[in-house]
Length: 198
Length: 98
Image 1 (tube, each protein chain N blue to C red):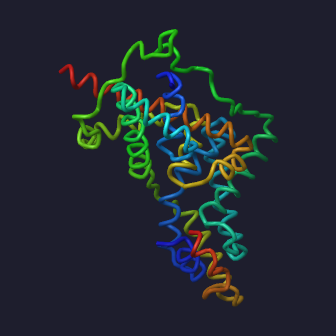
Image 2 (cartoon, rainbow over the protein chains, first blue to last red; image 1 turned 90 degrees about the vertical axis):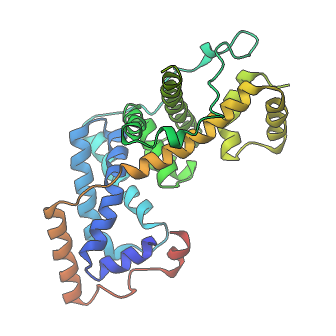
Image 3 (cartoon, rainbow over the protein chains, first blue to last red; image 1 turned 90 degrees about the horizontal axis):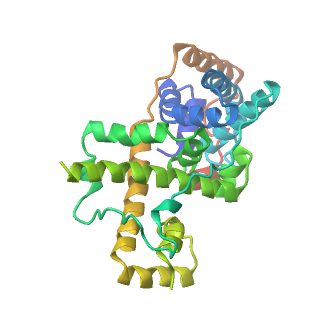
């Protein structure tokens, strides 16, 4: 359902529309709040405050941006205000851990990647346990990388919009995104290699 | 010719479709001769799909009774004052963006 339809339903007092929006967006808000405040309990408080603001300001939404992005901006402002008040500054700089040891000095593969040709990851990861593996890998990422993955892969934000939400640069967002995806790829690859050896 | 390391650094731009035409050609040329890098690009593409599906699967939350009560109160207030409902807050342009 389009976000605008949800908005109209909510303006008409439809509680199921609000529950639907909350259900699909709340965990994403939490991830973003975590990356800005750096604290789980604070992130939960700020997210709750953001939802209260959304309810209060619902009639001011004009549709200039998708409803979900409008809510994410409210959350971002609240999280940044809270982090500033608490004297917290969470670094969104990408960590320096890379995969340089995978290559020789000549730039060739030192440890060739496993070939997934004969394997469909969707098939291997079709069991609940395996989906949990990917979700755990995402949860194990630094909070800034989780936030970028959420905003760009799930909320379909551009690097510019994502940078505005997280108060960083689009270039930094792209580095964080690449690091996050590469980490998940490594986790899946390790799982596939271990299954091949069974 | 690109090295394998250089290709790995451009792999996500390639699968996202954000690298230049010239770089796409160089990557395809390299992949035609390097099975490892073709495999790496395949991994990168499949990982992107798995991340999206995984995020979508694990994201459902249940709204609290407190928030639902606040929503009910706000929307019933708005209805009483005549500012709620209908298309008043919605912009038809948003439907195209949503």
